[in-house]
Length: 125
Length: 422
Image (cartoon, rainbow over all chains, first blue to last red; front, side, top):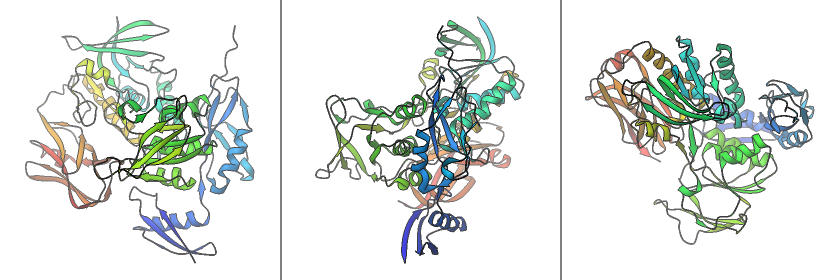
């Protein structure tokens, strides 16, 4: 049996959770002061996910990069693989907030979206 | 001189929300001034998510949160003068305000305003405020400066990083630099608790195995041209380094996330009465400062941890500025508000006699568990609430109902009744 210690992030209480696991299955959660803590521990120990936010390069934009996010949380273990994929991406300006930069990031089926707009740079006269 | 009803200084979340609220209350002759080339303020570089959970019930990134308000500003056609730095604010004897600013498109500019909203935000505490011994090499940045390099300029400031201070920007940058391939060796926090939000400690440090060294500080910076290492040490309860606990960590970058200071040079010049604890103006429940017709909101008033509350506060300032312009005078008798027994500050600092229902915003000075927050006036308890945990990093709010507000007839105190400090 494996024991894991987590800090619950559902509310500012920050309960110190202890999770007992066996073969990847949650046997018990203790230390939580409300049911949301148990749900958080379950998800964190079985399939932790995160929304990835980063930037990608923009060609001919007024700024060199545009911020992006995954449209939904992706598996936590894919964060670095996704970052490597982002480094290979360049989008041409203009970019508008909400633009789909990549429809399926790293085979997750989850899209990568622009979270800000970057206008096209005026060519030097 | 151009005559305006309302000038809003700062186009970040506070300035935009204040302008939108004032417009919705009928103010049409208004102008937003901002020194950056776009609206949004610091949110433009805060590309992480988690903004707007309270207000929009969804997790937005900083630029997305800013865009919601910028779209409203555009929809209403509220004029903005960008790339514009306000240099001076003064009040004429008849009460009108003169705002002096410079911008590349307008040059030197004087505006005449009947009311002004201060929404200039805050600045980071720099190295100079810390007295860290050692050389002065390149590679020392505030966390927010590093955030701008990475997220706006697309440049990494270093590869091997130590972060001093566990404020939210430092925590966010620990994750950001790690994702971009840097190695973050440690986050050192002088206090025995972090000043950051719990979710940031978990998702920015624990997720990546970055050690959070509580009760630790940087005692020396090494390197001639570029940072080569820092020496950290544990500190005792007196916050002084404990000899023999020093540890030298090789690194090329030191990021500082050691607090934020409201940017109030203008307010001071204008003669606004300041609160030495918040570093912002003293205001009443309408967010009016000691100068009639001058309002303040957002991080220039007191540093917030959630932008949702900045927007909420700015809307109060915007609405009340509109009421002031409609001829509503806010010069009723004032009752002071103060914090004690663990409550470090309370905003607003004053309440007008006959005030409408409002909320108290306050911060505690230490981590406390199982406390009762008590709001009293003249020996009467107006409201009390039990909290399982309060911490300096999380601002508390306590709304007062009409029947509670109506009982205010003197000094209001907010205090903690505690079972034990951690």
